[in-house]
Length: 196
Image (cartoon, rainbow, N blue to C red; front, side):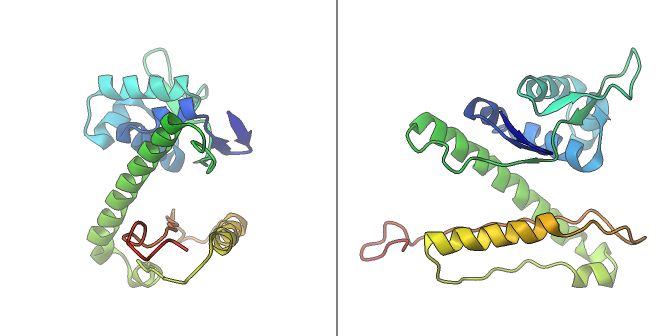
């Protein structure tokens, strides 16, 4: 496990634990909303507390969550996220097909959860004040880039987001930014076409 401040870059073994959608949802809730018990997570996720307890133990075994020693009593066990974010090693699986499959399974789970969030955001959009509706976007761009320039663009976006200060204004909310960058689907493998 490589840790860099509040970020974790999981090993392939750790990453395998995050290929389960329930675990990734639970980890997300603990990161965004703070510590919780298995029972409260079960209620929010529509599961039974036995299932959430099992998944929490799996997350703890792989280093993603830890006991919250400041909360709880003899009857309640509180959990908190051990890191604020997960970063994947883009080189994972270059020489190992099983590791590549694990990375792909993890990314598939991430995309599934992001799709759920976007769907809920659209459903809840009419309930937001106009200022928040104006400050939301579901946009895409289609520049022509080489792999090197695509990586440079992603690095700049990452830098801007990491360096952007938290807002202490009274109307500030948790704001979700999802960055997806990929070769336009349908181009790879088309005769006479390639991704370049």
